[in-house]
Image (cartoon, rainbow, N blue to C red; front, side, top):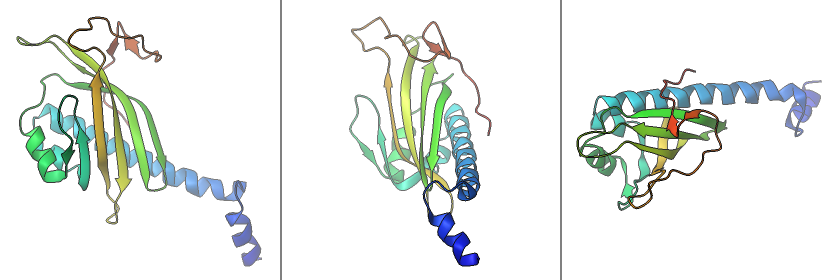
Length: 172
């Protein structure tokens, strides 16, 4: 009987095995959500050490208009150059399967004395590392408009107001 259960559990799509996978994915989503909240908190505190600690040792950062940034130490250096006051993120999707996942969202930076407000999109990729901690492996973002383009493209989400994301903190 145990052997039959093991064989059925290995069969693709067998309903008896889905809850375990679903609960593992739910735990992964919760862990990724915690990392995103820590990211937002560190960003708002302008804490380059805390934000760099959320990345894997071999992570890549792909900022717009900047060379690829490789590794946690160089990512720390990048973020130590400063972060935008008033930064907000809105997560649109979190996908987790097994030991990897990603977050898709929008961001908003309010205007200041030097720059207009900025809205944009991001994707952050995650991996559960051998120590069980979920860390960022890739982080890329881009603005909705370029310097020469004053009109933001229409957004397919219904979670924006006049092109601006709805700032909020993610909950598990």
